[in-house]
Amino acid sequence: MGNNGKVKLAVIGLGGRGRSLLKLLLAMEDVDIPAVCDPYEDRLKMGLDIVEQAGRPKADGYADYRELLARDDVQGVVIATTWVTHAEIAIAAMRAGKYAGLEVGGAASLEECWELVRTSEQTGKPAMLLENCCYGRDELAVLNIVKQGLLGELIHCQCGYEHDLRDEVALGEQNRHNRYRNYLNRNGELYPIHGLGPISKILNINNGNRLVSLTSMSSKARGIREWAAGKFGETSELAKTEFAQGDIVTTMVKCAKGETIMLVHDTTLPRPYSRAGRVQGTKGIWMEDNNSIHIEGRSPGHQWESFDSYREQYEHPLWKQYIRDGVRGGHGGMDYLVLRAFLESVRDNTQTPIDVYDTAVWMAITVLSEESVALGSAPVAIPDFTKGKWISRGPGPKSKYSLDTVDESLFAN
Image (cartoon, rainbow, N blue to C red; front, side, top):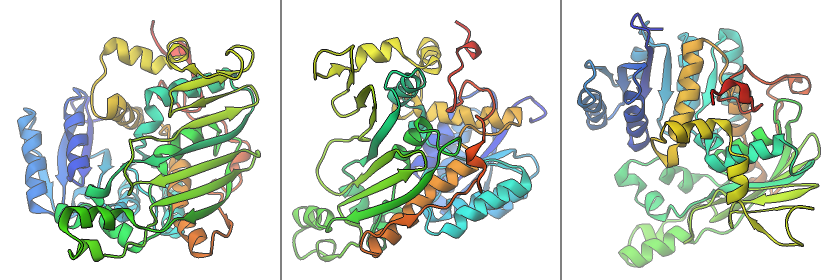
């Protein structure tokens, strides 16, 4: 704790995402931001201005994250840099004795995932993937429904990232957006975590269950080039660029307890947004895309019911409280909740609700899927980052933000 009773956090990476997280943190009375970091001068200045505009004491600005990590007044860092630097900075942060909160993005190598785990175990410092979708209203209601046994024994889940990002990817070079270069050079499940995070928690991954193996298949790549031809003409440089990343990548994952997960990455064709959620068990099924649910013996015949009344009945207590207190922040309010989950762990010096084992295995899916695609969709083993502890690991610490258990007693009515 800072000497004024506030949690002292720094933000590393001040692109669009980093700046929005910075604003959210500055709106919290129990947080101080003594330092921010970005190698781009214009972004660093924007970050420093945001701190001052919030009426806060002037923050120190750094171009090099290593200099920031040398400070002894920072307890945790929020890392919102390019995908391929998340693990490197998180490892350095833990070695410097700080909690690491990483924005989402897949790993480029298995070694960095193992290094995250080893560093966290050696230093005793948590690394938490800031997966906001784990705190989505629907996702938490479904978690509650599953915990209460409404869907029976789980058999199959689906999830994904289905989001038309053609303009964001195509214009990545001039907008300094990291997706462009990844799509140019890589082909696999590049962004697994928005879907896989909530589903893993629903399936007790790393706590009595684990992800065992995967196989991935990638379609041809046409979306961005066609978009660019329509926008800039068929002779434009972008319309002639060959992208490695297929338009649709489908990954099947097998779990130790026999469940299967289908994961879809679909970001370069015209479509409405969806995380493609589906949770199916022996007694029923929930599906995100038509906001629907079917429970045997409760729903009429073979018909869907609207999820709305179920969500009302099985609303997660965290969201009940949140709605009462006033929902705030980006992405429908879940950005705020994931940041609170992180900073309250820093404040209380406890393990984070998404721990380093979750972080490592979710990030690893990217590099493993690239391997499977490159091998003609061959099955690839998923490492057990817990080294066998998943079999008997219990839930994490008691917390309102726990994703392992739903404890009504922690919430005042």
